[in-house]
Image (cartoon, rainbow, N blue to C red; front, side, top):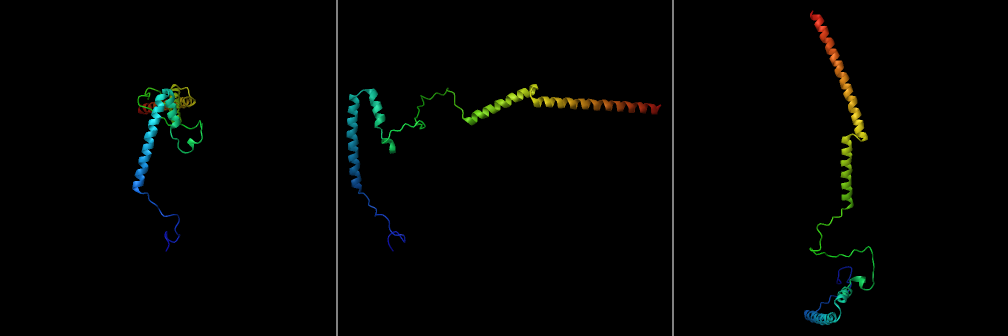
Length: 161
């Protein structure tokens, strides 16, 4: 059976680097970085301090296509970390849309309840009218009961005599 099973073998055999070779490459890379760092420091000391900070930003290695193409995307938000000393604790916190809507809803409910208690809303007027009708009906029913009681008392007093 061939290497790789029934489907066959794809690709080449794996080749591993010698550890000594890797160490040699890493040493060479460190030396280049050290020499390059010394040259950059000399350039910085000869140039003005203001321009050196701009050069550092430009010299930063850009990943992907960024190094090849200059892109000005107004929608791209650059992540800038803030120091604790720069944070303003007393600054007003911006609320999210949901939080703003929730606060507005609560305020509207409070306004409505205040007007309702004062009797200025349509529902409050309807409730008060209904209560007035119920009170009148109860008063009429009480008067009828009083009259019936008086009539019964009058009849009882007549029957006792």
